[in-house]
Length: 143
Length: 263
Image 1: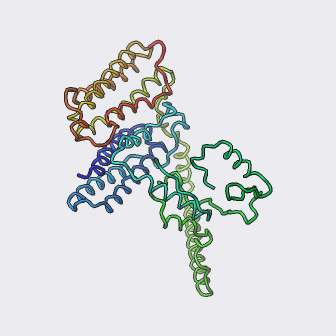
Image 2 (image 1 turned 135 degrees about the vertical axis):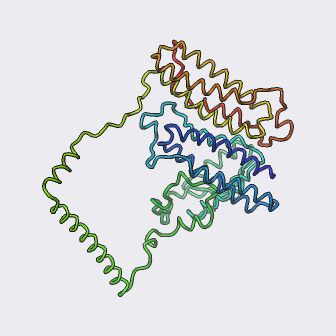
Image 3 (image 1 turned 135 degrees about the horizontal axis):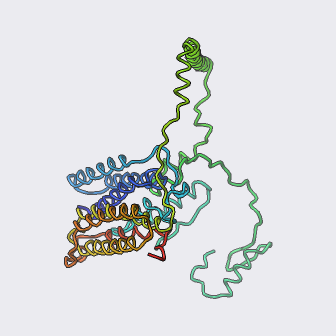
């Protein structure tokens, strides 16, 4: 399997398990878990987009897509209260200043290889500035 | 003017000085001065509600389509102004909806008035009956209780991660078993602290039961550290990071309640 997708799937598998555990906790009523869930789903969407563009054999693509879809389904099923608010503010979560669901998401940061094309993203941001203010902004160089 | 790589401090100082002069000052073929405040109309537009949840926007989502959506004037969202007959039709439909809703309210009022006095009394009595109070989960109050509760919350996450890693290539590596052993040691230490604590016996028992459960899960996970590192073998290609160690680090997120001094 392509190392990029293999690593991402490994990471998402762990993150999903941790989020699942915290959804049984007071985090169920927390905006932190809600945000982490949104980010998790968005990350999967990005992975699916990357997969569409990638030159990966069709069979492999399908197998990766099955995994991504199963993660989607599991993430959608994470238990979350209808109305969420920060449990620290509510006085129930006292681990401060950390946040378990967001900490779980950060497990994805363990993946540093294969490197992501950061320069391309910065170029996009620079382009955004140009479009909004109408001035020529130099493209920052990422080292 | 590009002074990148310029090492002469005098030139740098002159360039900076030239930039804030009111009169145009020549420097290395350029004319530098401070033009004062921007003479043309300022760049200004309303950004409120252009992006409803900016905190949820990821860098990769910002593309041409996204920018076009932001630039689109808010007024346009209401659609094109309606013409003659369209306007009348829309108003008639809305009036019809209001009429239907008013008729529904009137029907409810009539039903309410038609209910016999006795039935109304019974209903009132029912409403006045004290409702059973929902038991609120007892909040940990003491520093000691908080410490153990927080630790156990963290362990739940760590164990979930460990269970997921057990089905991964980490199962055959050395870092994962090392992390499991480390978690076991910490849990043992936590149990010893619980024994020494001044918590009520019932609370201690409850916490101990939970810890025993966690210990059981940890015992079922690999603990053979003599296995080869999966990075060295070439199976793990995530880079310098390690899922197992990072999972254990979830416990480091707990900083709110330090280990009680008497524990």
